[in-house]
Length: 345
Image (cartoon, rainbow, N blue to C red):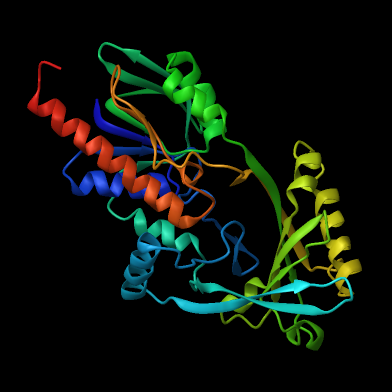
């Protein structure tokens, strides 16, 4: 029996767990993947690291400002760019100011690893079912080996995308939670990571982030290798347009997905994107929330505290994820304090 179980080790889940642990609660995080961070993801490929999800950390408010300050005090964080370029129909570049984008030498996943310090996390635990039984939440997980394990807790936090929470919450018959969850929609995307031999043509590019507003295939291209000192190869990450991703989301042919994106980039930019040394594709089924609840979290205390949190509660940003995680922790901490003061409840 755990005091609190948190499902999901993304920014919201880690922030929530850290805050609750600081308040003196016993917290266990269950994460379905081998690592932590969710969309704050870095891949190790061909002697380098590549940010396949969130490209950088941008100060967006009090939470990200504080996180950035903490990271700067703990490790090397560097300014990557303050400008995005937009590809124009007349084959020209339009530079646009944006918020400061900060990168980490080991990739953005170092942010999640920093938040995960001193937290109790069990990885490769896929939650299959949630039940209310014997005055506790009972969570059934499938481990990597296929075995089932059951965990129990007095409070439960679902820090996962709303569509993933729906099948877990639906059997509990909690309309105050389920109905708002069903209102949230996500855009999917594909991330195509590619590496090339350095050439003067690649090195002369003036942009770090390029948007292609007229393309329904490629939405953005990130010059990933310019975030770190690694002169042996040039690395880009291409993010697909949501419309393209929706059309190809369930395809098993990732080779064709990558080829389509790279050929589009070659045709639009007249650059040899279609000739990489290596490539890898990642499918993000829940890449960005299309809408949000305008609330820090969804919560109920009946029959026991259950909270849903994530960026989709407030918007599509790291700031939204951190705010939601903190909000969930504050609500739950207040509930637990109240229950301790009123044991008859």
